[in-house]
Image (cartoon, rainbow, N blue to C red; front, side, top):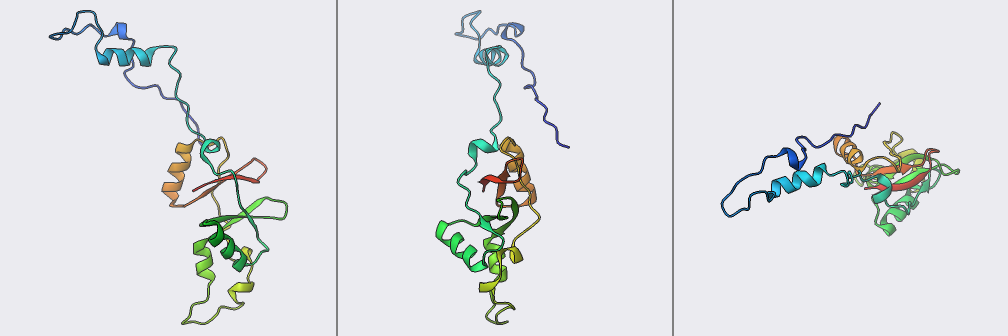
Length: 171
């Protein structure tokens, strides 16, 4: 189970804890740029930076396709919209898979081998979609999503509400 831990910046001290530095041309008692930076960081009025969340950067207009639709329809939709991935949903709108350009290419007939059986034009999206998915929720930190996408070498991550319905996608 993943935990989030807030880590304070190391070596942050109030400016009063840093002795004044005498430098040629500098007035005694005037803080150095380093002291000013320490002072800003230690100031209670400095708000802690909050992590970006999936909900702040995800595409919210999610185009989906049902698993009972034809592969040729998925190909047309991907091409017309300029997408590389389509979330696949049940008739109730719950995510059950993902179909990508690569999945479609894998299902297309090879000229040397002849058409697969049944022909790809009449096969359903559910026959080719990826069912093992990694997903996130809208409140997942973007840093964690980027780490997972890089580690797992995936090109998109569906963002789901707790009930399993897609509300966004990150690519």
